[in-house]
Image (cartoon, rainbow, N blue to C red):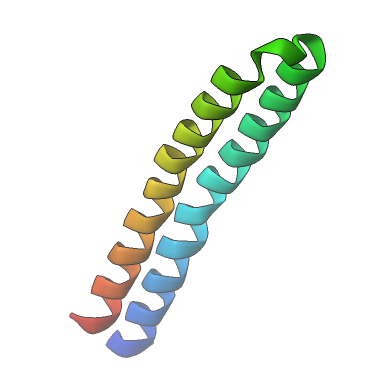
Length: 75
């Protein structure tokens, strides 16, 4: 394998594995929020606010993985 092929493989693995965790986490967050809304519909505001904040933090991990993948490609 050449060095260029290794860089491409590393970048693909970085973003692939780096986006897997946040994807699963966001799905679990949505599931938990929908269960909470089903049990207590009056608490919609705080549940949705906390869900959106947690999703933003989980998505930040995927963005960091994307930045690492881009750095691997161009260095």
